[in-house]
Image (cartoon, rainbow, N blue to C red; front, side, top):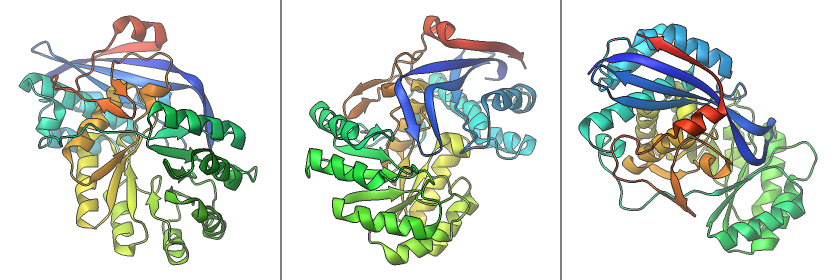
Length: 370
C-alpha cells in the first residue's frame, strides 16, 4: 500500500454560537480536510485546525506547507509505516504541528481501514468505558453562564470547563455565579488560556477561586513562562495543568523535572497528531503527570482521532473534544450521547464524511498528485 494522491479542502465550519476565549472570539472555525489516497483504492481522512495563537500556523500557511512540503515528503510511502512517516515530515519542516497532524491522522485512518480494525486497536486496544466530555463554556456574563450551567446539568454533563482570562475583572464573579447555580452537583474546571499573564496575578486569581471547589486550573500564565508554574505550585493548593506550554518532549521534560504541574493538556494539533501525542502521554506517565486530550474545535475527523488515542492509553484521564457538539453543521458523523461519545468498532477512525456537506462548507480545494 503506497500513498499516491491527496485532496486538500479548506472549509469554514459554522458554530452554533460564538466561542470566546481569552485571546480571541470565533463565529466559525477554519479547518483543512485531507483525503489521502493509496494505490489500492483506500481513502484516509485527516484534519488540520491551525491556530496562530497556539501553533503559530494559519490556515493558508498550513495549506501551503501541506501542498509544497509535507505531502511530497511522504510520496510513495506506506501509511502504516508511521514512524518513518514522521521522520520524513520532521526532516522536511520544523514545527507545523497542525499541518503534520492532518497527515498523521489520515495515515492512521488508512492503516485501520487496511487492517479492518479501529485505530484504537492498532494503538494497543481500548478501555471498556466510552470517553466523556465536559461542557465547555465561553467567556460570557455571569448570569448567562449560570443559566448555561443549569442547562448543562439538566442535559447530563458531569463537568464544566469555564473559559476565563479576560480583562474585564469578572472572572471571579463568573465562577461564583456558576457554583451558586449548580451547587456541588458538577465539577468546575477553569482555563485562563494564558490570560492572567504573570504568576503574581495568577496566584491572586487562583486563591480567590479556590473557595468554589475548582477541579483544576489550566494554563493560568503565559506559555513562554514554564518556570512561573513553580511559583504557583508553592502558593496554591489547586491542581495545575499546562497546555500551551507543552508542545514538544523537551517542554514536557521541564515540567516533569520541576514537578510544578499535576497534569498536561495534549492536543493533536499542537504536537503533530496521534503518534507524537501517544509518545508524550507515555513520557508524562513515566514522569508522574496525568494527561488530558484537548480540543482546537476540530470536526468529527480529528476529534475521533483524539478519542481513539484517549481510549488506548491508560494515562489519559480526561478528554475535551467537544468541537462537533459546538458546530451547527460539519462533514463528519461522530455521535455524542451527553456526556459520552460513541466510538464504534468501525475500521479506521470510524467516521463517515458527507461529501455534500463538505462541498457546502468549502472555501477552496486543491488536488496534489504525488
